[in-house]
Length: 280
Image (cartoon, rainbow, N blue to C red):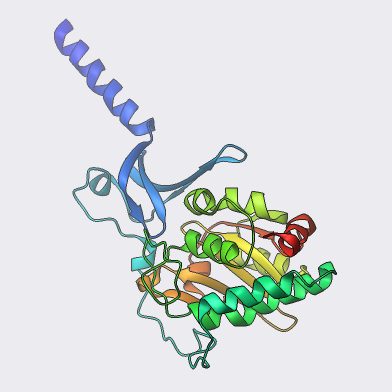
């Protein structure tokens, strides 16, 4: 009797331990690492400053926890989207080589002496030039390409590679592999955490026109471009592994599928922009 009791206590203890322990799943859901927790699967994002955020992957339970069923990631739930108007510019003009474009950026930014001029030029780069070169580059979770339309690019590397290419002195690899919150905290000002899409729109509308913002989602990250008339999401899109796209935010499945948002304004970071004007 005592032996059965001890066995029962041991089994109950193991079940309780497994329920509360967060165990790495060794797989990714869309653009986020997955953990086993509470007999379901969660995506996780952690950093030293803000701690950890965990989001349960819907429709997961004990079967997925035990790897008896496949993960039903949110990015696999979408119907095939109507891509009309998804990419802002499908017919790209003849371009000079990317390396030559980067040389031109370096030359011009070193002639700029006013921070407002620098911000306007930076916005022109992100609103026009980066989409011209990078739209059509495919997404992959491990993608790190430095060449537009050659190879694949993950969402974090898309941000840090571009910033490094045009002259920002940042920890390119470290920030690309870190949670998006770390990248936003390092590079942005006016940072907010939001839980509703309408709150996100309101925040963006309060930012100056021609702002470049960084946003972190449940599974993803990218640039938000705010013009006087419209707001765009420039990112390496994980949905259907589409890759780099510039789309109106109201049409973005990646944005609308997220339950949390962390966003900050990169172009209003005067210290960062000032260093960019003079960096080598």
